[in-house]
Length: 304
Image (cartoon, rainbow, N blue to C red; front, side, top):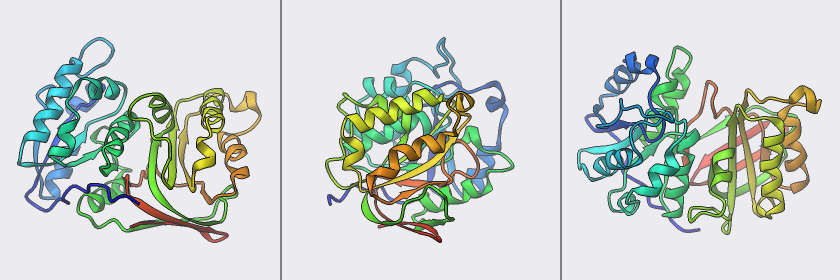
């Protein structure tokens, strides 16, 4: 497999850049110091995007060009070693569309975030670069200690992998491939774009989502099936699908529905992986080659 570009890991005294890649901050977020206290407790210095506190109609954190300018400035700043999106929401695709994405490879740095930031992970994977699917400042709270710990491990290069318990829908086996995906709805939105990942190399797909309905989850999975994408995969990791509507009408849970698509594939599948919009949300190196091993005792994911 190709060797993806891996940005330098962080160390105490480094600087991180916190910005809004997509949506504007909520009123509650504007008052929070939790993220500042957390990063400073790690020995990090903090810079913030010029437009971090901007808010425009559509819930955007400034104009598309403003958010892109913040991101470009962070990439060009030699002091900054990682860029953390304050929240997801909506707008990352608009930011990526107007910015000079070649700067990612010219000035490689860790990009941290998930949900709508899945688009940025797709852009970086298209450029053969690694990134971090990890907790953002907007989701820090009293129950986020484990999520914070795994993000610290990821940024410091200490994250080796995870072991999770058994699940009735997990499928046994061993697989090796590149970790791709993220938020299911956002991955689907890359189809037909220049950032679409067609799984032409050995790939293990991770997916999670929130506030979708059963029919939209079914439609997205059916799109992957009918497009031949599911048949290409070497393995699948199912994260947290939260606040999914329509389960009563469908007379089954969302994981029952997902299993209908994954069970016939004949590949290892991990259900119940703690990553998504709930706590804890484990950090993941997107674009990294991994192995997964699944048996009746649970599942193990290793970063290579």
